[in-house]
Length: 532
Image (cartoon, rainbow, N blue to C red; front, side, top):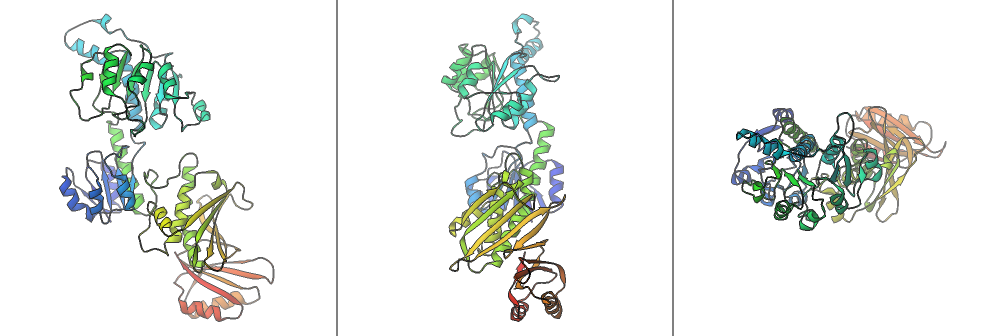
């Protein structure tokens, strides 16, 4: 596979990709050159300058993944990529430390008039009284948004040996009260509450239709006249004209801005005010952050090209919150179960039932829902499947996916069960799996409704038979006659003399002729070959 890198990337990120893929680093490509070349590549890595438009995506016949070395994806047409089944992943935590530190630095710079004092002294002036500032200790820092960067800012501002001994008040409807309490952060019920009660207000939200212009004239009027506004998030969240008027009229004491509605900008009226500190979008501009972003983007694209879901995928179901890494370990198992289920089912119906039991049932399992569906659909559709287009293709086929959760599992820490009815017969095929041991090894523990225990392999034979002496020997003889070597075998039965089942891993594919020979032996009721 081939990967195109259009903007400067950490050498370690390039080297990571070169271990598995052919990599072209073509910096400074024009939009026309990108359109001409993109069809050659399976992966694309960019920063903020490259525009991945719908037209680019239309030309990207082989593209499977786009990696953004940074957090913002405004320069990628996510909708067009999703329609084409292209995974888009970013590096959301790569610049969090840098952005958090920059926020704290701007707060101190604004509070102590550091830039203006520096400029005055360089001009030959010694005017200490002119730059009398305020302390941040014992003041209230209000955060609008408590995501990755917001949490770093909160930790830096709070008390402790390395902290600033500030109080922190935050509004974020997606963070629980318990989580805020653990962080020693007071929970605000609204943005207005943050504005009214804070001495410093720092913004940590993405730019969306809902947040564009969030801090306008009305919001600024709610702030204390001694308060400062900080924005290291995204331009456009603050109405810059309203802010200029508020600062010039003394409605608030000052502001510190790293981002602007239009960038680059060098002639904003805000730059003429003495109570404003500005920087040219430096939030992520540290050596460490840039290197981290490049490596993370490379890791995300490599993961996608291997067929997995990158943990930072924008348009694929990535597990979130507590237990995310634990859940991700079940993705391969669920896809395997889906593949097995399809091959065990005659005329698969349109309702897949997924049941989670035990520890895995406690967490966000959307990734596993898609993994199981992807495995099931592999034998049904001609389109290449991935974690982006699978839900859409399932809907097109009229496949309904239902999930159930059971908090306890009698025999295993976690279990995943897939059920699929055969259309027209009402018969239901069932397959169950789990992960075992410290290496979380996948195991199939139920098939055909019988308890088995086998590690899934590329070629597996599933047999239903009567429980009578000599059945295992007959299977061995037939497979031996056809030169098929047995790797492992698991036998399941419900009671002596009742129907039974075998799951047998073999080293070679099992042909239709072998299956026919097995079914013709008295006592064998069914034989199916599964290929993974």
